[in-house]
Structures are given as C-alpha cells and as structure tokens.
Length: 251
Image (cartoon, rainbow, N blue to C red; front, side, top):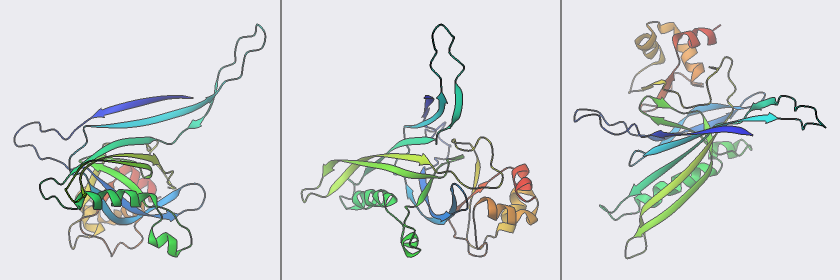
C-alpha cells in the first residue's frame, strides 16, 4: 500500500485589515441511491458551521499496488496497480460558549453525532443511511463524503455540569458518486467556485450570470443533483463546474 498525506495550512487568516473572512462549514445532503456503484448527492438539508476556522486540514489519498514475490535469483516483477482508495479528510472543530454559558456546544456536537445515524427520509424508504457531507471553505470545495468518526472532547463545564467548550475530531471518507462525466481529478479538495443562492433566484439566472448562457440550467441542475429546480433553498450552495464540463454533461 502506497500513499501520501498532506497537511494544508489554514486559509482563514487575514491577509490584511480589509480581507473578508470566509467561514468554513459542512453542508449536509440527503443521500440518493444510484444505479451501479456509488450514490447521488441529494438536496441540501442544512449545514454545520465552524465557530472558528480550522488551523489545518489533513487530506489522505492512497493507491493500492500488488507485488509478486521474487523466486530464486529472478528479479521481482513490477508491481501491479490495483486501484485508488477513497480520499480521507480529517479536521478539527473547536466550539466555545463561555460567553453565554449555554448548551449551544452540546447541540452542535449532537448535530455532528447525528451525521453517523440514518436520516429520517432514508428510514422512511426502508434504506437507512446517514447524510452525505461536503466541506466548504471559501473557494475550497471538498468531495461528497460520509462521516466515519466523530470524537468530542469536552474541556470546560458550567457549575451545573453543562459542557461549554469542546474540540471535535471529524473523519470523512469519500463517497463514490455516480455521474455521467466526472472530472478526472475529482476525489480531492479542489479550488472550485461555488454560488450561494438568494431568495427568488433561479438556475437559469445563475447559468446566465456565471456562464452567459441561461440554457445551461439543466446541466447545472444535473451537476448538483437537483431534482426540482423550482424549489431552491435560499442560502444553499451550488457547485459551479467549468463551462466545458457542463457542455460535456449535456451531451
């Protein structure tokens, strides 16, 4: 097994007094079964915002190789590539409620734990599965993933015993997503553009604003697994593929 592990420094630091601070968040999506391997990312069901941006992100991608043992004096044969393993992302989320001394930290940690249990919609379809998540931070958009582990460490409590400070270690693993034409570099953190929807905005308007062609709204809906383009949630985000990717998906 060969692999590489990369620690990426925080991009949340200010580059000057006028810089806008982009807040990181995990966007939750309803999982949708797809034919063949993988799943489709359904509509956004909410988000878990970072109270403080992470200091670093650890992204891991491994490749699987198989090498046959050498026999006698014969040289070993070249290893055979078996495939790429899913990408993994590990991050820390720090929460502090010492200014209010309330239960907000507990509620946020419970929301993270909820990402490890099936959604109500999936239970109703007799196919229980937890939500999929996508990490966002400014222009940085992660891969669709499922949370494999949440570890919460409470470090400060009120006199009544309510935790008001916690550090959570969250581990995510890439979910293979069924798509017609995927970017060959998908499965890693990519500096892709995103668009946050506002009230009354349509996909056609976004397509015209971003690509100069309102007719690309269908391809934009497909790229974001939107089943009903007339029921968009203000505040949710759209991933914006390149114009070439959208044109290819529409063929």
